[in-house]
Length: 330
Image (cartoon, rainbow, N blue to C red):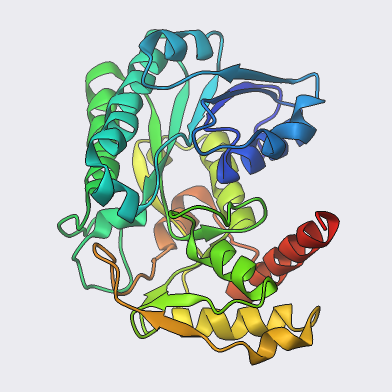
């Protein structure tokens, strides 16, 4: 499949971890990229390199403002909607803001896309949609009941996308992200994801704290696999591939105990002392799904998805990036 090139693409949340990586990749393919971000969780440093590219422009604004959304979609061919408030604990602590951003903001973007007659609207969905379903692997057509306000918002996104296709003819594709990790992921703050948080703790010789006994498992998905599937969703010419939701994962699972083992192994290549750090264990986290494993057969079949990085290879790349960044910031 020929990857998308020469198009104008809006990336909402383009200064975030996933969004900034997408912006960078799209620019290398000679696309014009518009980044919309309010910098509530995104960072300017993530797009420093892209800002130097003449094909890149930044709109500082909030998807909760419909006027901003209408301005951002002007003359755009495609939208990659990454803007959202992530984190299950954040949604439990503040369900109202999570809903405003993830549901009302999402609806604003759909309306703006429809009004501007955008060709395709690709959005970040979430594996949290599987909720209390215990079936493994997770198959797109079989979900459970949501376990958190965040999960509800991401499921509502899928329902809205479906309705906008059926009612207005807007072509959409949802990508259910499974525990994405990699370069530029924020290790700081109370809602930081587990991998960057653990890496930072270990580099600082502090014990990472696992919620529960470490037996919970995840389909940890390296950023380059996520970029690949976004590009395939942008580029596909198959009508049957549109207006679907796809698992965005590698299709393998590792426990949190596995994760800390590999992190210590890879980091100790730079600092042998890290191998001796004791792992700490805390209470289980409310709203957490015990086990997550994706079937990626649908994405393979309809989009030609072929993830290049398994968990360990992606983790090695990630550890090196964080170590190099830590050294350069000294």
